[in-house]
Image (cartoon, rainbow, N blue to C red):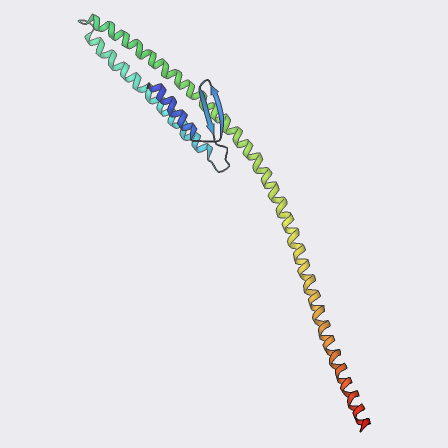
Length: 196
């Protein structure tokens, strides 16, 4: 597997960890973006950008360093090694192609970074609208809950008032019953006296 293929595979696996919907940036390049409200997309994208930029920059520096080292070595041997010089020139050409490929890959990574930033901005805007809608729903529910609590308090007060009235009525009924029973006993005693 070439270094380019390895980095492309790594990028695919890194993006795959996000889950959620798929975003395409070009032929053969697909990025999975997680849209769940609990995921920190900004941190994930920042980490991914840092990894890709460091990887591309390090590859470029490695290629330049190796190119410089090999060129100096070939210059020291050029006088007595004509055939080796031709082979080295071919190798230098390959290295230049590799460096050009790395530069192209860097531009591709920068384009992908810009696309991811656009996707992040769209996602944040969408979640912002959803959050505003949810907050509006919560405010409405809280207002309804306040009304329910007020109604419940009024009902409790009315219930307490009716219980007080019931208690007073029961006391009055007990008083009247006691009076009636006393009068009945009095009449019974009078009737008994008349019979005697």
